[in-house]
Image (cartoon, rainbow, N blue to C red; front, side, top):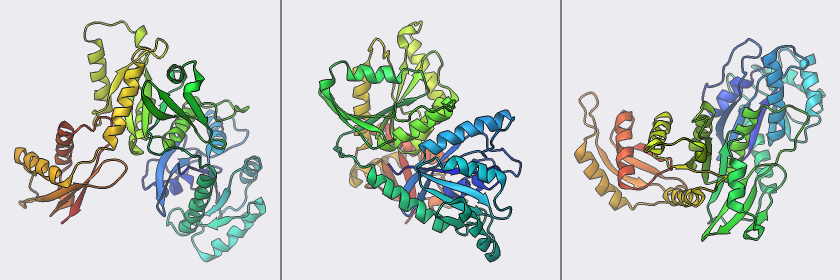
Length: 438
């Protein structure tokens, strides 16, 4: 529940360069041409022990005739509403431009912490020039260079401080021992129908525990011998005059729901199959170390033969490779078909996520596994895995201690994970292996 950081500003001020530095990747297009960041990017950053989501937005241009810049403007406005903290990127070399001033007028109506990043301040003289940006009226200006990284530490210290303050104000009292489920997916696949089918008409079975504005609601579900929290983000964001970018907003909503959840039900429309956006949402859940259950909705509308369900599941797993150890439940939210089976599977995945295996038992398993297939040598040298243990983390992490950890091939790592999954039930759970020097 650490929150969202949005990086915004006019085109070509270095937003994507800062984003890449924060998330440690180069998955945003970086170019001097205006408007090259047309699709939004979402990444996880970690600073001073706090993990948070960074949103890289395209350059905001007012009254543009360019179709892409019009779409970018819509997405930027959505990002401003969803963010917890906002970084306004400017170029200290060009100073305040008309485009900057126009965008600042938009930001004045946003009731969020706004930090001004005076980018490209590569020397002391340019750092002094950053004082110009106090004319915007925002109290905090940080001279920095997103290319070299100078000055970014001070900015991130303040970002984390603000996110921590936001987290404290959004605290709700919940029982942390109970699993927390969310239902995510593309628009119009039946998420609301599924939630309504779970809650039913008897509202006495639920107790609403509202969070603060823009945060998710935790609904306590206690029925059919099952008790858990259902994380609901529907209806949180008020409608605006902006025509929503549906795909962008649905991903934003999914990230917000995942922050509060242990297990994600990813809902897919059987008639549409597993699309690239579905795979993106699945990837978001796995990267955030959440348990996963795939729900194929509207199965009652599907023409079926003897092996239709099996063949459909095989096709889905092929698209999700290499993570294929995931439960797939075929449901009809409207007809309430296999609703209880979906609940049972979610609780099972939660139990799998909390599975702990003793060190002695693990090393017996490791010895047997390496007997069947030895670790491939490297450059004529034998790689020896001495022992392994499960680390005390919220999601399963296994540490392997060996003489040359960096030389263990990916193919052997996959072999170990596949064998571990055959021996122990980690269905629906992302498992991490860490190889360390011994």
